[in-house]
Image 1 (cartoon, one colour):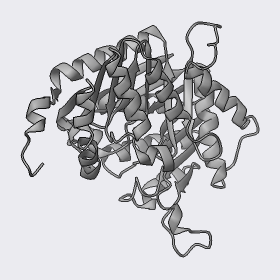
Image 2 (cartoon, helix red, strand yellow; image 1 turned 60 degrees about the horizontal axis):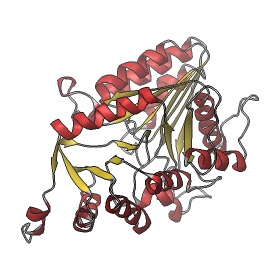
Image 3 (cartoon, rainbow, N blue to C red; image 1 turned 180 degrees about the vertical axis):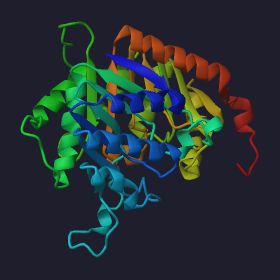
Amino acid sequence: MLTLLRDGREAFPAMLDAIARAEREVLLEMYWFDASDIGVRFVRALAERARAGVSVRVLYDAIGSLGVEPETFDPIVKAGGHVIEFNPIAPWRRRFRITQVSRRDHRKILVVDDTVGFVGGLNIGQPWMTVEEGGEAWRDDIARVEGAAVNTLRDLFYDTWCSLGGDRPVEVVRRSRDEIVRAARREAGLLAPETRGGPSVSVLGHDAWSARRIIRTVYLSRIRQARSRIFIANSYFAPDWTVRRALEKAARRGVEVRVIVPRMSDVPAVTWAGRHLYTGMMKAGIHVHEWVKGILHAKTGLIDEWATTGSYNLDFMSFRNNLEVNVATSEPDFVAAVERSFARDLKYGCEEVDPVKWRFRPWGE
């Protein structure tokens, strides 16, 4: 079961509440973790659970959390929790390789008691806080996960955790590559779906040791099979030629294709790279919408009656370098929630790029 949570306004209270209810274990894997008010609130919540005897493990990325000092996590460690930094920038270390600097843990995962999990694009940082709380109210999505998929998220966390020297509980069994690929092929529609209990929730983990192209494979397959609609919201939209061609071919065969991208971005270079593609996409019949209410950071897709959200961007970094994770499903309730969310964004937060005005845009642009 998946529940869509929009922005920090909905996500942060739900995540903190889940942590407060933890009885056995809390696992947090986060690309961007800062020492703002929301970061401090999470540290306090995690430390409180650790003092209560709950097993607490935190994994954060060195580059994504560049501004945070290791001492920020001291309350967790002093309370009995464990914290690991992913791929630190440490030239003095024997195994440090400059070529590995671009390999980042871009995931955003919270798992509590193997009963509830959270996956999305939202980080634990000040920009995701509401304006009333001193934040910037970045537009983002995160899914609250229940059911068997939570165990898969837990396994995914521990695979990375253990690769960095962390301990692995005896009951955590590393999934085989064949199992991961088989699940991805089923989600992509290349294998017959499992019928037990209706639509299932799939965890699409993009990691180093298994098939690195899983999320892209599923996205591409769904785009190629689309019959009625393809809606994509992506904060760093710079797809490769294969994905662009699939989107353009879908539009030419009558599929309604709409892409939401940020007008302003925290990474301007990616915005300009994406704008380079506007002309070709609009010529093929793709509708391009720019988010104009601050920063768009979501990574959500709606293709026919299938929906996905997570940390995966349609860009080079997600495809080649980063550890990523998405959840995907055909559950009617979640698909309907994503559909309503897209309708709300298109109506109230976006401006569609006009092909004629774009053709005659200023030379500076």
